[in-house]
Length: 240
Length: 165
Image (cartoon, rainbow over all chains, first blue to last red; front, side, top):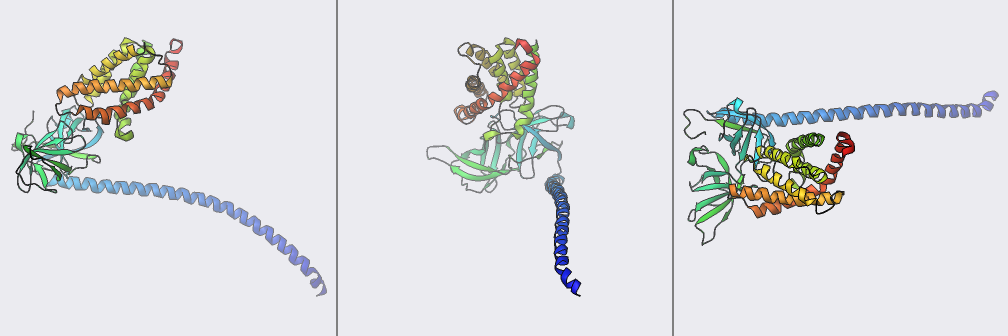
């Protein structure tokens, strides 16, 4: 007992030191493992985030394409699905390049639409791609009418938007009116949504009113379009 | 001949940049005309008449990728490059700043020529508005990227033309 009493402080001291060293050593080893595990988990997290991002992108693309395809199936006319692969090389024109051309039966002046509304017309074709002149291009003219009261006008592209001009000065139009293609001129089919009236300009000395339009299609964000192939019975479309 | 081949190579790079790179890189919403900058820089450095004719080719490529009036940019590029050949006789265009300034000035000139021709074909075109909103900011942008293009051209000359550069 006496020996134990004497050796106890020494024993506990030694035990304490050994225990501290052992704990420190184990903690250090463990820390390395934790650090490595942490790195591994971080890498896994990054991989998962990347996969999640891909899934979200696939999902968004799926819903976008499905809604466009459902829209195409509803129509009796034949439509060719095309993706936008480029745009005008200069800053003056609103042109988009699509990945369908004369090999897919496209021709000049075929109409290009989306589920949301009118996009433009095909300006030129090559075997594998075509250039589409958007309706906001400053050269574009689309005969149109106000859907509510059938008031006619002509839609001019203004590069960054559209204006409906040559509206009868006595016509009653209001902000929010839907504007559709009128079918006059046999180029654009009748009834395709173009946009909504967002502002009206008229001065007493002017013969016509001018309406500023909000486009139905967001031209900055379009990725896919449909080119309409005219059927034999479709008299609304004319092709050069 | 080596200069012509080098210029053709740079032109193809310019076409690639105009078609692909510009789709993703739009500073202040404007598309930089890489082909024009490359040809102007080469003209300032070598003053060869063949570069002006190469400009016609470059312009026609740009025509086909935009409005479709083949020859419009061909003419404006040709005239601009011809004038650029004369411009370098007036000042020492061999520093980054001088070349950048000259490229900016010639961009404005090219823009004015092309818009003037375009105005004859498209009556609704608002030339003055486009000059202010498109050509002038583009000239500034061209001036800013010109030092990088010039450095690339010098690098190309050192590698493909050698002592004659």
